[in-house]
Length: 131
Picture 1 (spheres, rainbow, N blue to C red):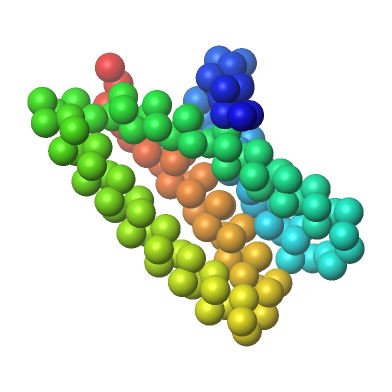
Picture 2: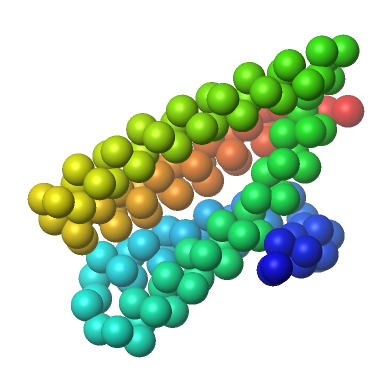
């Protein structure tokens, strides 16, 4: 339900500001989960992760829709979705395997993925063609 606030957040903070808030929130939440076993900070970190994910979905869909300019729009969006789903399957397997070994390392992996996502987003944003 919180996804309806994504557009308002983006209008207020800008595209890069929104990315920094959402990806940065994911990094901080994963670090908190990796560093603590206390219930209250863990609950807040999980809620932060869920909120960042919920706000990020409409934000990323909007950016993806703006990026696709081909006349075969539906095909391009389907290919993007398949790629994203494939990456999701791979990361889920990595999280599961790592969590069996050490749960904290799994959370660090999540933080690293969020940080990598933020860095790749900033590089993409700076190099994208201006409309």
